[in-house]
Length: 411
Image (cartoon, rainbow, N blue to C red):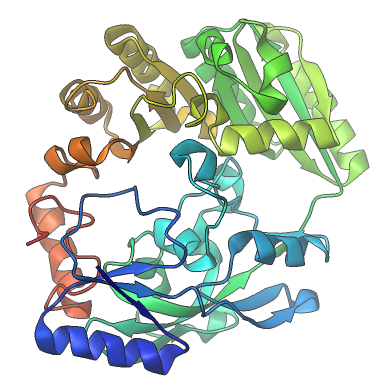
């Protein structure tokens, strides 16, 4: 397969126009860290954006950074961390889960739109994307958004680009909002709760006025494979975690109030600053299901559902499939590692998820499995038709990442 390496946005235009003229599809990559997510694509060439790796502008006082799409995410995070700032939506590092090097890019972060535990408070990647330069499937450059939200007029196309997996346009540069890192962080731990009771505890905490920025539950089975910061938490016992962030005095006061609120569920144990941060990074990156661990050969699903349904849904899936689950977002996000089967247990899982009003994406599976099942959750006919109209308005000849999001379109 031919690899087309570009130097700037003008090169991207030329490559896409040539592909349109010859009706030959392109696979869009930065460093390729997420190539294993999505349907198998039928493409004849790879459009490599890794040379578009510059930080165009960083204004710490204005909480804005503009960076080219191929910039390594680790480098950009290191830069903003040096100014005591962060991406508040807590972007997930998929490398441990997929077993790839830590080479993700900013463009891949936006294209995937996978946010971490702080999503329940800060919003997702789309909420922090202020503007973008991109090239459509017509081969035309366009700009959407700006450096502040009030600059947006008409359709806010940034929201469409986030989570589009490169099927709408080739992003060449993005402008993102950054936020100050919290001065202090504390996590409260509850031990020994079953999934449904933990769901109730997390719901109570998130419904409180104490500004909880993370709510997760790890059943006891998750600790048979836990590593790093999680290894010492469970000792085979389920753990429910609630995070508070902010200035030190505020965190101390809110932690005391939240401890009293959740006392009916058990005695809360505190976990401070660095130890707390390491635990939440491990949850964000789903380390109990890491490719290097005992469950590394198991398919992994990402399930989004109404938080109130999370405990019952996860408990049923684990029981019926023999798999393991982890809960994030107060039960609204479930990570499920299921014993291998030819369909990655898609039929069982999607039946249960549909009944709960959620949707599921297969994040890790072999090429053979992804070839024969729907990686992304099948949509209702009307929603699917609307999505296809939007996609065709950007890329009428289906040149960009053809077939990545819909099985049967990679021809």
